[in-house]
Amino acid sequence: MTCLTAPFDGPPLDPSSPEAQQWVRDELANGQYLTEPSWWQRFVEWLSHLFGGGSSPSLLPSWVAVLVVVVVVAVVALVVLRLVRPESVTRRRPTAVAAVDDEGLSAADYRRRARASSDRGDWDTALLDSYRALAASAVERTLLTELPGRTAHEVAVSLGPVFPDHAEALASAASSFDDVRYGHRRTTRAQAAATTELDAELLQTKPRLGQVVAR
Image (cartoon, rainbow, N blue to C red; front, side):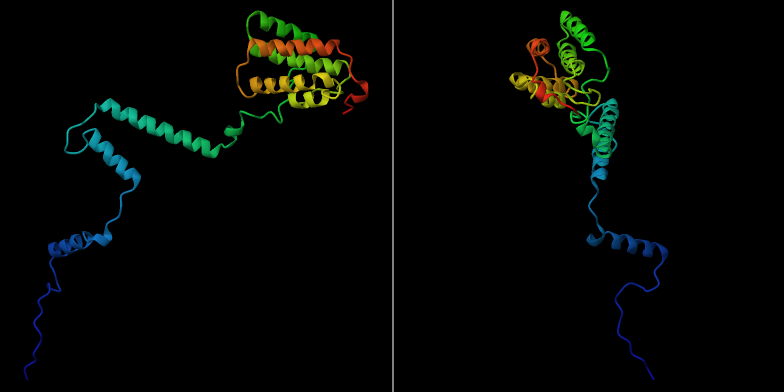
C-alpha cells in the first residue's frame, strides 16, 4: 500500500547550527522586537558621534568631551541634591523662627557696633545692630519681659501698641532686618540710618505703659 503525502516546501525541520542562528537573527530583526533607545543610549550615541567614537571623524577636540561629561554629572548631582534636600529651598527665609538677638549684648554694646559699622560704610551690619539695640533697649526698659527667642517681627508687633506713633516704622525696620539677616539682601545707607534714628527716637519717647507686653 502506497502512502501519499503532500509536498512540504518550508525549511527543513532539522536545521544545521548556522541555519538556526540565521533564523534567530531574522526573527529578532522583525519589527515587533525593536524597542526605542532610552535617552541615555541616545546621549551616548550622540557623544560617540560628536567625539569621533564612530566611523566619522571627531567634530570637537577630546578635552571638550571631558568638559561635557563633567557638566552633565554636575547638573545631575545638583538636581539630586535639590530633590533629597527640599529644605534648601526654604532655608533662605526662616524669619518665622529666627531670633533677632543671637548674641545677648546690651543695647549700648549694639549701638557702639552699629556706629562702628556706619563709620566704615557697612550698612548691612549697622542696620542689624541698630535693630538689635532697639530690641535690647525695650527689654532693659521692661517694655519687653524677655528677648531671647523673639523674632524681629514679634518685637515690632509687641512694641507697636507701646509706641503707636512708631508702629509703622517698627514694622518697616523689622522687614529690613529680616531681608538683610535672612534674605541675604543688601540694604542702603538710608535704610540703616532710618533704623538707627528709630532706635534713638524710641529711647526718647515715653511709652504707653498700659500697653507694655507682659509675656
